[in-house]
Image 1 (cartoon, rainbow, N blue to C red):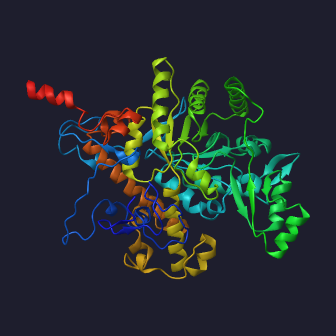
Image 2: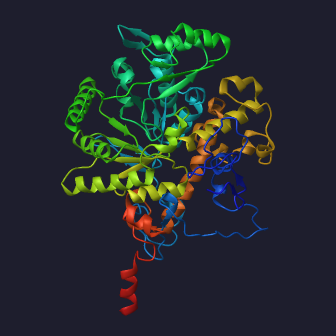
Image 3: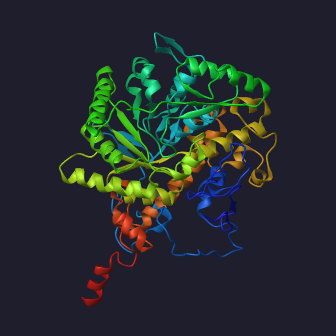
Length: 543
């Protein structure tokens, strides 16, 4: 990936990943990758900078390898599909702002989303806790689902357990309540469970306290790693607390030699790990029985919406996830390919394990088609793993059409929270600690866009219109930044869809994308770009 995009005025601080984000994304970063700058300027980042002084042109090279970058989005010179009843095929109506980006997922209970977008799981990492208000309020205002990841209850020092079951979790309560306060019927709050969460009775606690307001998610894995979740702690007392809570802590803080090394400064931190699931199972049939029993239990205690998150495992695990989720009538299956990111996964594991996103997503479509052709109502899908831009969204929706309803975006949707919090802390020092701001003053990369929140954020007044002037004092700048970034994604998606003559998400189809090299065609079954529509071209020429 190119490090600098001069045409947009963006640059990566570190080496860029395929997504366009730096491989190491810092919360204190002063800019300015495309996602960072989009969190300030919104849809203006769809266009080249310095209008009136420049012309701009793409290099348009035919890229090698197989990735989402080796797919191209098709455009058409006639037609209009998916218009709402209020719109006609008039040129006055068929404009990109009229593209409907709403999406719906669910088996019997349908959950509406204003965009085909959801966050990745934001669990027990300290990043998730520190910036939660920005993430949750931003997602609620935009109208998209947010996922509370695993282990939130277990790592909360203030949570209360009686006989191994949770009776109070202030941190989990805070996260759910924060989102629900601004939830207006679009999106959802999803709480994920792993082995430790199941042992702690998290599901029963949630259903008793929140009922149908929360979606519960079972977890098989994620794209960043093939072991349980982990966090790093620097306090040996906290490490001992986590060990006593039943977690794996490495190195073991109960060992005298480890304590001695910590006191001497030779060991400065501990890694807390979760357990692998299904370790006592040895066949797909046993996995199915265990999984179906877990779903049955969740339904029995009252959950009406249940989802599953799976990772970049091989084809057997993918087939199991899709078949079992379909048979269990789950509401959503999120498939996270390798290329995803997280805060604490072992680096070489992130670099070298698992199925890359585009290949995993391709097989997911293939398997969904097998199930659909056999007469099954296939579980709704979400694709994730290194997707951060509007072109990624369109391509992934098309690659998995008609089964994919949402794009799962992890690090991309976290950047606005970081940036907004840093700006708020710099402008309002009295709030810096509360919002976890990292700057004492605004850097030049922000000052060139303004000196106040109303000047800096292109989306400020849109948020103010939604919540009212009086409520703006309660909206963190990170949430305003997320709104602004999401507005850019939405407008960019609308433009791609209008060019493809698709005015609703459900009308996006696989023939709206093409492969730019033969290897991508072979792996994805998406036709090579000059073969796509070639028969129709010859029919015109010979007609």
